[in-house]
Image 1 (cartoon, rainbow, N blue to C red):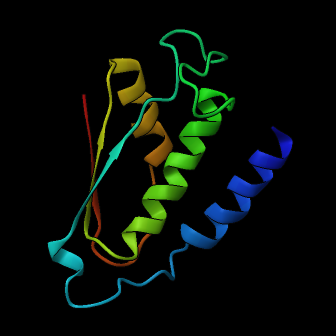
Image 2: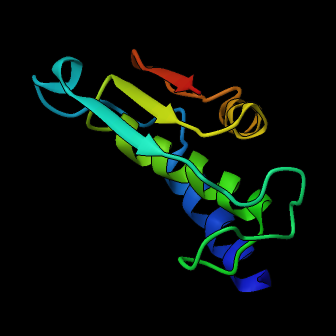
Amino acid sequence: MEQIAAMAAAEEKRACSREQQARGARHGRIIGLIPFYPGGVGNHNETGNAHSLSSSQAKASWLRVVVCSLAEYMATVIIGTCSAEHEAMAEAALAGLPFSHPFRFKVRL
């Protein structure tokens, strides 16, 4: 888990940079869609699925990295969640994105 956290931190430093620039003329016309299910509601140690043994907090960190990497290519990203807790977790993970180019994200229950 320490290696995963270190990888997430390094990738966030690279992808979530204020200097990141939008690429290409189609940037504003492409929308990214991300399903976000970090695990069991009320139990941050439960992974909730077979895709990863990472904690829900680690998955929230990776959500930020994924959104940052998509911001380079699209102006809007919509994150879908299955619970109010996951919605709040996603919004907290994405708070304060640093981009100098136009970018929007929406978290939807």
